[in-house]
Structures are given as C-alpha cells and as structure tokens.
Length: 268
Image: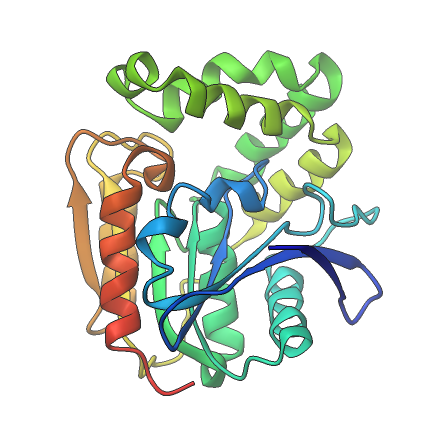
C-alpha cells in the first residue's frame, strides 16, 4: 500500500490509500472527526477478502490539505466524488463513521448513482437546533486551550471503560492522531458538523445499513432511529457494549456490516 495524492475540484490535495483485496467489490471508508485514514486499519482485515478498500484523509485532516475558511459537508461530498474519479471507480460501497457518516450521507444524497451500498455508523443526519453553538464551543476550545484539553472528553465518548482498559494501545494511537490536528482546521470542521442538516433526502435505491453503539452519547440511538426513518428500507443495528467509535471498538462487527453491503451491492 502506498500513499497517493488526488486533487479535488477546488485544488485541494487529498491523501489516500488504496488497499487491494481478494474480492471483486469496491469500498470507500470515511473517518471520524480529527482522525485520518488509519482510523479504519482495524477494520481492513475483515473486508479485504471481499473488496478493494479506499481510505483517505478528509480535507482539514492528516496529510490532506487544510484550506482556510468554511467547508460545508457538500464540499466534502464533492471531494469524495473527485477521489473516486481519481482512482477510476464508477461506484462503490460508501461507509463512514461519525463525521465520516455525515459525509457518506451527503455523498449519497448528491451522487446516488455512484453508491453501491451505504453504511452509516455512529452518525446522524442532523445534530439538532443547538448544534451550531455546541460545535463552535468545542472547536474554539481546541483553538484557545489546545487539542490536548479535549482528550479526556473525547476518550470518555469514543469507547467504553472496559475497552480503554483492555486496549490502551488502540486509544493511544487514536489520541496521537487527534493531537496532531491543526486547531484551526478542527474548528472549521466542527462548524461544518454544526451546520450539517440532511433531513431532506432523495429516495435511495441501494441498501443502507445504520449502526450505533448502545452507549453512544455523541450520536445516541434516538438519532440513529431518526435517520433510519428518513431512509425507507434502511436497517438499524444497535451494538451492545459499545460507544461512539464502533470501528475502533468493534472492528469485526463493523466488518460484518460491510460484508453484507458488499454482498448485496449494486454493480460497480
């Protein structure tokens, strides 16, 4: 696997990884806020028997460019479209976690012809009426106090206490990625999430699978249920003993969800 660079329509450079699999499917996975492509590395072994897997650093994250200014979720959807063009994929199963789920949902809404199946993990179509204020406060804290000031809050929401105790190495790697974020880019992404509202969706003609952890305090079960109700035919699976970042905490079960999407995917 080599790191490659694709160029988005506005000139932003996007860093990506293309992992060749043993199957004929194609799957692109979009990471959570303040993470990068490595967020999905624990899931890869459960998917590569079925598909090639495309991972990337969203704009404002990792090795991708961090352009100044506000970038709405629709621009992130355009980035994903441009990335698929760069690797020569017409269609793919598209899945994302948390922020990545918002981006995957926006992509499906704006480019449905390019979606072979949709996975929405630990996410929501809308964070609520108070979201702009709440996300602004979180982003500003990263700027004024530093990203380290947010770590205790994040760790308590990402995974359960049991997982923290049993897999400290996984969380240490995630924290290292989190701390490497540019605070101003983080603030702009927080603003994007606060403004995102995807409650008006077209009819989807591909399978959609929604997953949420029973102890998810960031995008709780009620938000997942509301999203399921927006998408006729969508399935909702609630994981026990899991919080907000199920790809970190339950990579095998997320792999099972992706396999089901790949097995039922519309032709690429």
